[in-house]
Image 1 (cartoon, rainbow, N blue to C red):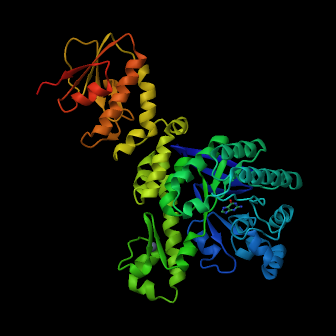
Image 2 (image 1 turned 90 degrees about the horizontal axis):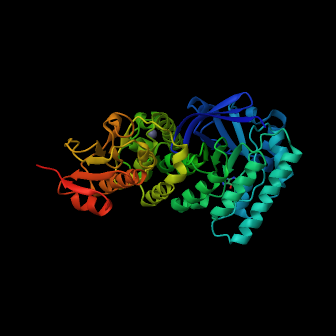
Image 3 (image 1 turned 60 degrees about the horizontal axis):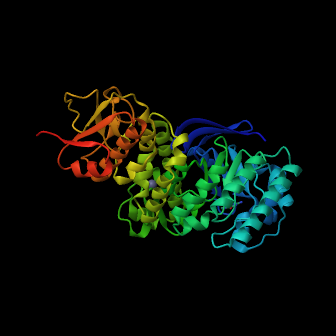
Length: 483
Ligand code: GUN
Ligand code: ZN
């Protein structure tokens, strides 16, 4: 296989990188617009001018239309679509999940995808829907894996994608991912998540994706099949997804829906077009609603917004501010917030991949206390060296009678003055202290104490925090600050 993935920047589980497919390069995270050859609202050439480096189209649709099939076989997909970026094709599995069966075999679709010049081809995997019982999910997964093996045996030189299925069962997802990895796949889509996203089951989405990720090697490029709403992309990138494909820009346009990063609006209810894209700046809301080109203009806006969000995410990964972006995006819907909180519950799994230094840490409420940077700080703080009598001073003032005096910065906790300017203590923007962050800082004191059973500890704080400290750090003496 000639798909290679180079990671350039990391943040949480997310990465900015380059995928090389043959001689072509796609920057990641990447959004592959779904192109329906029957109704191209936006032409692939226009997409390329908007910065699209790869797209996806459905081989099944090409195969079912005599006109398109013959043309694609004769001229190749790139000529038919007039696009010279990377073209990935899907097999017909999505139709399988919607209609129950398809008139194509695994071998046929793979041969056809190859014959029309697709650069990333997908076997006929079985997308197991969320309601499926465990035994059926296991059997379907076995079929999917067998079809991948068949694909490898029949087309050893193809750029074959290795879909990870397993339904809602996290152990199956993990097993599936490990099996796909063992087969040598370097490009792995995570499948059957569309029904979860359609019903806003983001908590389960996070569970399923993280389970799949746990079975994959960090060097594998991960595609989240059918995901592309800009409100959830930051969350998906934070989990370590690199490729997305979405028809949402076109499907929503058909229904008169205007995509924003914090949800979808009905264009008929808009008095203003709150967006910086070309369409929105050259039309009033009334003009857009009444335009004979309304569907196409909406699709253009929707795609612009989605691509801009991808750019914003790449910048955030580069700056180390992805947690802030995830936090902001996930507050737009309670079910997304549930997904974000689920991600935070997995901070221990995410921490090892996260980068060491970031541009800043903005505290945005109690969720921030469970971020990877706080966890890592609590894991490393016991390693600092201490004297016998240690004071942790909330207001930073030194008092005599101690061998070591440390400052205190919530939600991290105690810090030596030498670390006051370094990440995360130095680059963190903390508003007025609240109870959640002080409790989190106290957890930092506890881990410091656990690493230094030989030392004696006192914490000096104002009267407001004394009860919290006494409760959270029972082994330390609480001393009142003098006012
Ligand atoms: N598109 C959306 N979900 C899926 C999936 O699970 N498999 C395939 N092949 N395509 C999809
Ligand atoms: Zn716009």
